[in-house]
Amino acid sequence: MTQTEINQTTPVEYKKPCLFKVLYQPTEQFGRIVDSPRIGIPGLIMSILIILSSMLTVYTMFASGYFQQTLPPGTELDNTIILITYGGGILGSVLTLWFTFLVLAALLKFLSIFMGVKATFRQFFSLSIYAYTITFISGLVAAIAALIMGVSVTEIQFGLGLLTTEKIGFLPVILQSITIFSVWWFYVLTIGYKEVAKVSFKQALIITSIIAIIFLLITGGFGALGSILNVTP
Image 1: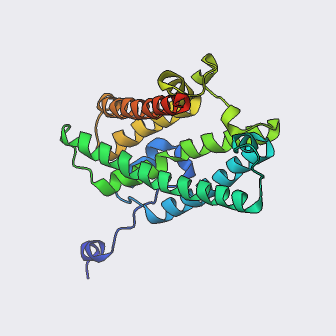
Image 2: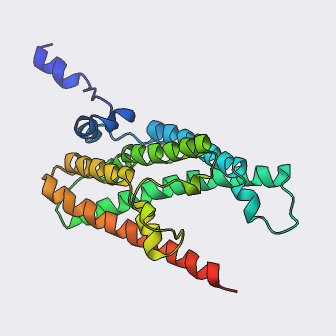
């Protein structure tokens, strides 16, 4: 057997992207997604991390007394309420996590049609998981800061939310969502799309900007809904 025949029959092993190397090697790691779009293992790791972060977040709400203030008058905080709150927080965070992956991947795939990009939905789904590392770190840092300061995580602000004292409403919620971490995520997502879709940085920036605007409008919409429900008798 010749060397050429050996090369043709030997399966090619592609380098796998590393979840946390996305933080400091985004170009290289996202470039690996093209040939190795992993979903299962990184998705499982991210789910476990989100569960731990969610538990810490709920703990800060109990420890700071924030959750107790939201209970109806005369309601005592017992183990049943605590378990339901932790369970709901964990389930909600995991479902939201995978729904976010699905929506982001679908948007990337849909918008790519107009760019003539031939990247697969699986590649975009993998990209969504790896880019979410930034969002996880944001939530973890907020929870740790709340724990150290003895306040609820809802009191922690990293960005433009400091410009307003309102907690709900269309504009306040949008401002709260614009932080150093969300800007970091936007940059990493742009780099990731550029590598996976094989387009220029300018083209990638157009796609990710559209997605960022969509996400901001959705976030603001939930904020406006919360404001309406808060004043409804």
